[in-house]
Length: 357
Image 1 (cartoon, rainbow, N blue to C red):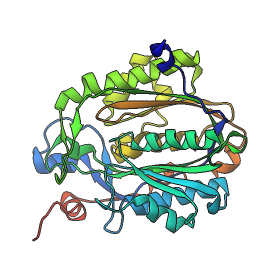
Image 2 (image 1 turned 120 degrees about the vertical axis):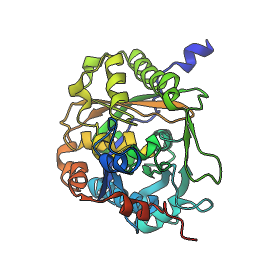
Image 3 (image 1 turned 45 degrees about the horizontal axis):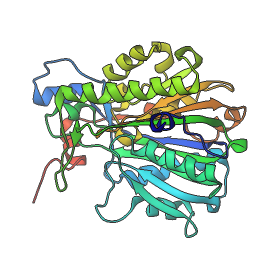
Image 4 (image 1 turned 180 degrees about the vertical axis):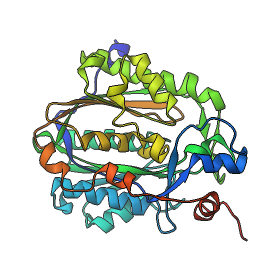
């Protein structure tokens, strides 16, 4: 009986959907070939083309504010109606001081709101999204803002340095009757699988090399996706778009095939090759790219992954409101197209890899 209850699809008492969404990607790009030039003499295959790098005046707070402003523009909502601001990230700018209060203050949401920072590696953003769905779905609030954003770091010369990018997205959750996409249900799949970690005071994360694929990424992403479909009575062909967490190009493509999805279903939200793995913002920004082009009636499956380990799966159905709201703010691909290429020396300065004192 307990197993049967645990495997039920999660649905709120009140139908909930996405009222507005917005993405942000910083301008600077570091080619993967530039990392290889410095550390391997240019030898070896490259996991991505290039990654986004934050500027000297950008961090998770500033980028979250930009993405959230886009979400508010699409929803055309008075900020004072938002009762929760939740920011999920692995790279909050302060060890002790919340990012969420900075975002809420900048957007004019304070003081009558709840604010909190979330952490669960790369699924911190979708974890905040799950909580926002629950808050709105219970009737405790009409609108809640969930953000996934990161300025990821990788140890110099490590495999992560090729892919650790920056960016993310913000989602304003509200009543389904005001939504551009309705949440049909969700499901979470979690085990204690330590494939990736960073100890307190450590500057760079550690990872389990190939262990990060099996039994971490593939077990959780495919487990969440397949169980969600089973519980929802859906099959792979029922979805127009699929967004999977993307630490590199190979993992989501393989996971999609294991679940029965096609390349056409995942290609729109597969951004890692152009901006890198944005960690807590990874699945969130993939979804924003899909919503930028989605049509009414489209169905979307979103599956995140967080090292530690766990996955959240969401089923969404796009409504007629999507067309008018897509044009109210810059699209995800607008930010991706706005790019300035830098070399490794500039990257090292921007990311404070050179310690001068």
